[in-house]
Length: 230
Image (cartoon, rainbow, N blue to C red; front, side, top):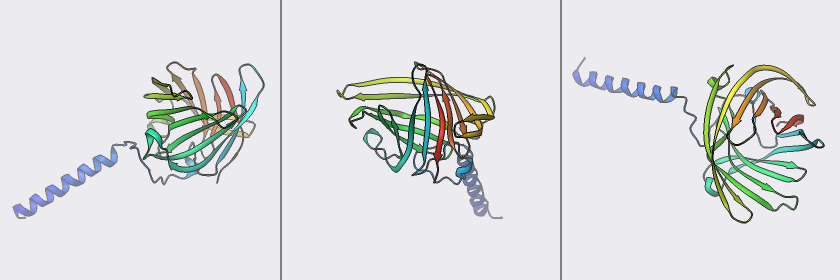
């Protein structure tokens, strides 16, 4: 083999090795991702038209229902302009919350959230930088006993245009991978996650593959009553 041909082969081999490293890195890069994982395997299968209704039981008071509906896939806008995410509207007894949640195939992250009163007047607009994890579905973070930490900054602007910036840390732990949980919507096999957030109440989440969140406990209890998936 000539020296020139040998050199070309070496360059090609190094290039392929470098590409292999990129693919194997497992980095969950931001931006639109074409996900080939079936929705039946996703722990939060976001799709336009999907709806989940929950029975919310406060520590003190009467239970009420709330419904979350995926309304559109769009640009988040504001400080997050250029990011494409699902717009999710949650209707509650005292108003509504609208959040923009990005599907990265191995995670669902929240970028922005707004709250509105019963007259549909916006009270608060919150931006999460870089984002706020809703659920992490990377294989390492679905294993029993897995624990990891994330940090983000919460920038909130109220109706008086006063801005507050708070840095937050979260610790997530997988406490069960196939727990049987019964809620008004039925009995499901669920992933149980424990989240500890600085400056906030600890929370527990139960997610069922192909369905979404079926239960949440913390400062109140939420249980799935019904759901509709496209």
